[in-house]
Length: 101
Image 1 (cartoon, one colour):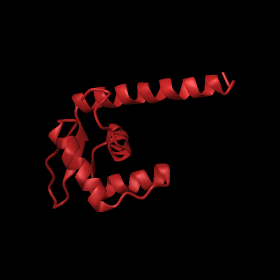
Image 2 (cartoon, helix red, strand yellow):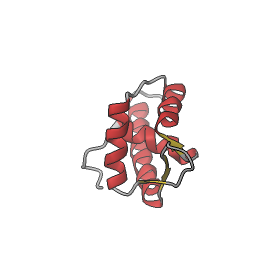
Image 3 (cartoon, rainbow, N blue to C red):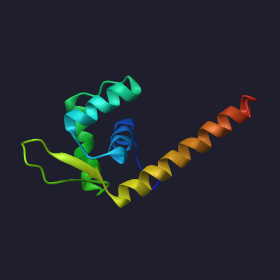
Image 4 (spheres, rainbow, N blue to C red):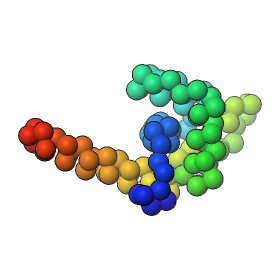
């Protein structure tokens, strides 16, 4: 996915959550709410999970119960790093123009 293609906050939050450890959907929602004080509803979450799974940025992992855990893939890590660098560049330019750096 190139930098001009659509990118959404839920995607970013899901990838950041999974970068730390494998999680199922409810655990991802909890992590996002605790970490960012943002509630993502199940429809938004699972829609985003479906899209980024099709892009091969995440994949499901075997589980012994009915919950379906996900893990970030190497492609997902590369994509996340690229997006975070882009955000860092935008943030640094904003701070620079504000005279803060």
